[in-house]
Amino acid sequence: MKDAFGKRKKIGGSGLGTFRSQLALQLMVLPCMAFLLIFAYVPIAGNVIAFQDFNLSGGFFGSRFIGLAHFREMFADPSFYMAMRNTVILSLLNMLIVFPAPLLFALIVNEIPFLRFKKIVQTSSYLPNFISFAMVASMWIFLLDPKGMVNQSLMLLHLTKHPIEFWTEPGLFRPLSVVIGIWKGVGWGAIIYLAAISGINPDLYEAAKMDGAGRIKRIFYITLPNLIPLFSILFILNVGTLFSGNLDQSVLLGNSFNKETSYVIEYYSLQMGLELTRYSYATAVSFFQSVMAIVLVLVANWFSGKVSGNRLF
View 1 (cartoon, rainbow, N blue to C red):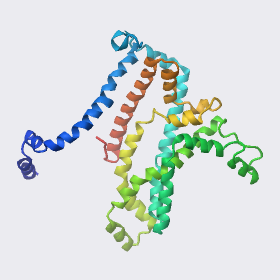
View 2: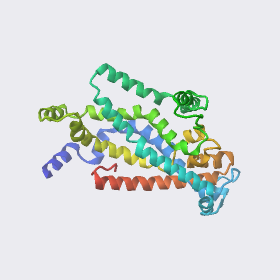
View 3: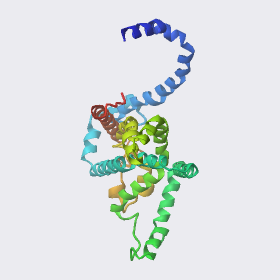
View 4: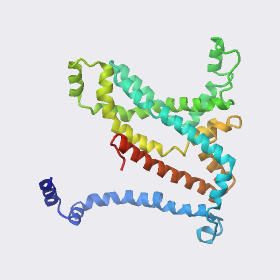
């Protein structure tokens, strides 16, 4: 290893020499770095208004500093707790059911023996991803309307005597959110798993066949172990959204009847910032979400490293 290191050092030269030899490539990265700096890192400084009584005329430097007052008010607001509870419950359902669904779908699609049928299934599963959520919401509201196709079918089959109020019953919003999430994202999410499966050495499957392993055993002993690193990385990234929630679903499918289960923290922040023009308070809510997301990603990264040996950083 020492020889290899010495050889690499000899070939690559010093860090400055390597930079000069790759100057053209380094310059190609500069626009992306400038974009990130201007639009991703500089706006972080705007979080300072979470600790101010911000007013537009005074700006950052003319607004009064009030410390943690907005955070104290936030934690004393019952609406904030309702939004946070809904966000966490919906995100946990998403991680437990919606997140693994593409992996299961990819395993099923991969086992389809007929190539043409396999392509039809794959292509049709991608389509919902390209439909805007406004159209998706309209379609599901229409389907699940008391006079819609689903209710009419249920009554025709004598499974229910009266139409089910899918969008006004608070207890139904969470399962419907899961169903719509799977319907819209399972095909698109499966692409990355199918790509990873195609990269597995076919000799492993041939050797397993010769040893008498069936489809199920090949999935459990070859396919799944090779997908665990990818699954772990995606899980770490997904954990960071635990305190975000799905704003589209909350705004387009939520209403005053199911608010106790559909109102999420992103919607709460949006209302405080844009409807009530409480910019500092809305920033404090977003700042809290960001801190919690960073903490969760760090914990998930550490946990994944301990359990599976796969870390994001």
